[in-house]
Image (cartoon, rainbow, N blue to C red; front, side, top):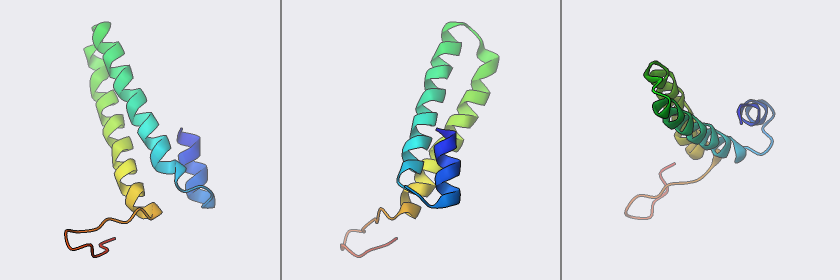
Length: 79
């Protein structure tokens, strides 16, 4: 996942894979959080939460950067 983000960003090859890889990392960190909750390792949860949020920021940022265009209510291209 992280390798796809780094290599794709540096080379420009398959930029669509960056948001997908970041989403996979965020999902993995959320699953890790549930694992730590079950084991009552609550001290590990802040790190999982921070890494999940960072990965989700990459998803949101790269989703618009890759070229998925948003439209407002009047069907005018915004991004």
